Amino acid sequence: MNYINHYINKIICGNALEVLKEIPDESVNCCICSPPYWNLRDYGVEGQLGLEKTFEEYITKLCNIFDEVKRVLRKDGTCWIVIGDTYGGSGNRSGHTLETSNLNRLTVGYGATGGNVKLTKGYEKCLLDIPYRFSIEMTNRGWVKRNTLIWWKLSCIPSSANDRFTVDFEYLFFFTKNNKTLFWTNEKTLECVDKKPLGTKGKEGVDWEWRLIGENYENYNTKISREDAEKYNSLKARKYRKKEIKKISLWTGHDYWFKQQFEELNYDSFRETKRGKNQPKAKIGDLMSASVNARKSLDGWKINPNGRNKRCVWVISTRAFPEAHFAVYPEGLIEIPIKAGCPEFVCKKCGKARVKIYKTIGKQITKNMKIAGCNKEGKYIGTEQKDYKSAFAQRPSETKKRILKSMSQVKESYYSDCGCNAGFEGGIILDPFMGAGTTALVALKQRKRFIGIEIKQEYIDMANRRITKVQQEIF
Image (cartoon, rainbow, N blue to C red; front, side, top):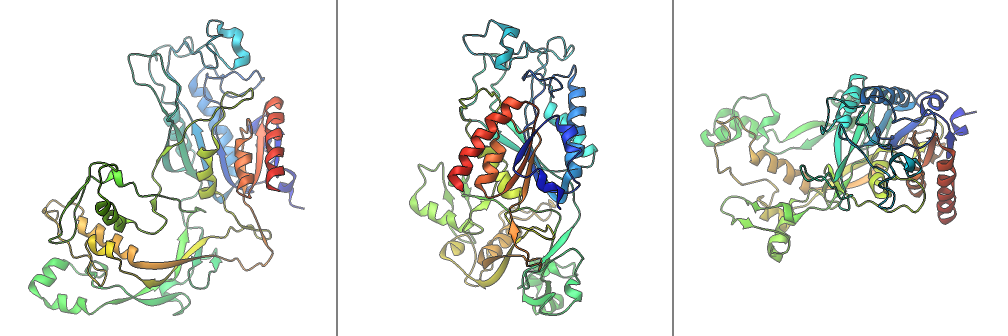
């Protein structure tokens, strides 16, 4: 019997650290949570996290919990943590309403703590940088930090402070427990293996194949640059120009499970776009003033129809929550991490997650690509306007060349297969601070499973009511 099934789609009442010790090693695919912030909320429960006498003690206790999270997380798992900051010497009226703002500690039921004036002596009016202190301690304990994401709140709470700016964002940290290749997928056979394959030393057609790479001199062991080779028509130029094919491995290594996320190209971010040689410039102020032709020409910069790789600033509005919980993050904030960090299909037998594999099946040269600076063969023909070589700076032409090459590739997507033929089920998401159950709701909506831990029974009852409603709508 798989002991982890005892916890699936349930919220366990208890201290996060103690409950985590009961969960088997390497049994969950992903962790997403928002721990209680230091000295901002009093949930009225003995042993709760966030009311420590110092923020150093808070960070130590929090990282001790994530030591256990690291143990129960699979080697290919991901961890996402929403965490906020606070100011030293704060009177702090968090949780107060306009009607109760003068009642101070009498409003504990509203979540107020009464402030940290006595706890942060020497840090008066100073931002304590708790998220970064926590982040550094996490990496000191072996976590691999992949991103600092910014949750930009368009509808943030107004601030009465007139000697600083209003804080309208929070941090979302993306960690993994591994930074070395764990498994490999084959784009032709769709295999997924744990042992390092032979690659270009293996069997042609299975492990590798010959591919046309064009006149990319940088792929070869030569000191002569492409420009000099063509300028002087040297022996090396003639020699390397003939080498248009190369052994390419069909295997791709993965350090952890991650599904790339995309976003639409923001035309407003382009102020001046340079075309290829002798092509006119397009100057665009903003989206409203951009001409239709200019906007169409910028479409040529899209790497694929899905858009560009998602950026690190996420604009997500907060949402009102009608019940008695004052620290509920919106579903939109964790929809992306759950899509990106928790697999849709996990083998019921071996536990391996299916990985999306892209096969190059053809080539296309669009009108917009030609506008962006390539010829009919898909090669970039533009030249730099500045001397990047003598400045030892990255040459824009090389970047554009790689982008255009990627744009020219027509791809189809497939899923890897472990070969067990035992069927698949959704990955498992752990939230050790489940609160009102938002993580569980998003997990279920994406056909994935969850394990929740919450110290306050009132919140568990609240979460279960929300979960039951979603289950009835979905199933």
